[in-house]
Image 1 (cartoon, rainbow, N blue to C red):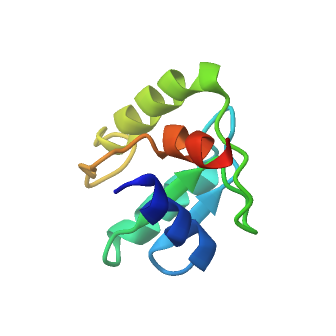
Image 2 (image 1 turned 120 degrees about the horizontal axis):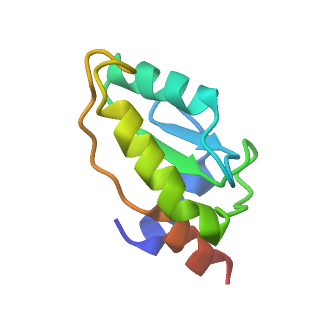
Length: 101
C-alpha cells in the first residue's frame, strides 16, 4: 500500500473496515476493542494518529517503536487476546507524516 492508497482510505472515512484512532503517544484500550471487532468480521485497517474526522495528527516519532512493540506483543499474546491474532503490520505513521509534509 502506497501513500496515495493510504490517503484515499483516510479520505473515505471510517467504515466497517477502516477505523481511526487518535493514539499519538500510546495505544488506548479502544484500539484493542477495534482489533477484536475486526477479528470477528473480515479484518480491516486501524490508523493510529488519525482523528475520527480524518485529520491526520501523526504519531509522536519517539513513541513509534514503543507503540509498535506493545501492539504486536499484545495481539500475539494468548493471555491478553484469545485466540491470539497474527497480523500484518505496516508503519502507516511514516506514510501519514509524508502525506502531511
